[in-house]
Length: 315
Image 1: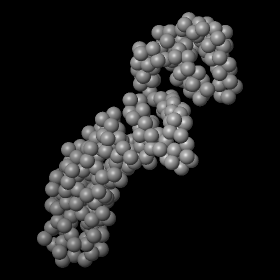
Image 2: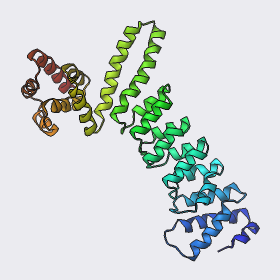
Image 3: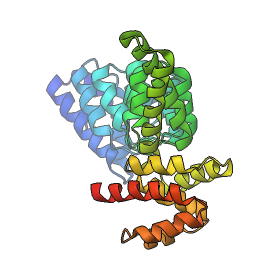
Image 4: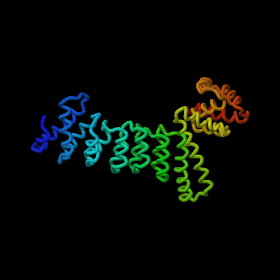
């Protein structure tokens, strides 16, 4: 293999080829003299005056599982053409290094890190806490990233008036239920003010329309939540005597069948599987008995049965 001292006497195309070969050698798992020589060459190539050489090297090094920190920093600090693809995909960067990049590098570097596949909760929080707006947007849109409750809360705290960002956050499949109401309140409050101003609505009427939207949006989001989160929320609602017939009727009218059945399980203190089994055939008589056991009056049960029948026809 070429010696590091000889590189300055070699043409551009040859240096590009060497950079590719060096990167491939370093990406292999086995150790040996070739790998040690390749690492020595790589230390020189990352400083090469030609962008194409550094780009060729960084492209091959993305699958390398270990690189010296100084080399990682050099590649991560290079021009965007070299650094961005490397930051997005390098396997040699651990969480501590990525958090360092978030804290010390520019907006584009933060965006690149935010787009990484399988981003950890710790790095996700670092972006939520100090990342630029575009990096936070990229994080929120990255469905493979672990975006925890504390990260969501931090995004809402930092960007309370960014409606589009709040909407993107609300669309995440893993959004914790506890965060949903905070997002809806911020989005709908601004929309209520917009309706009042644009259409000349009274504040009370605009608030009423927004409250209806709130309930529907929250129900749709809760419907997609993991079963444990849904049970936790509805159990808390029941604990303050707020899991009422109006709530159940709202779930039926908005086609939130899963919420309706989980609510019944909570009200009756029965396993959800049992409730689903009993309602599997859509028998209204069975539902009527369950609602009666839950303590609802006959008049209320009648209204719920009508809504239930309409839901079954619509499914």
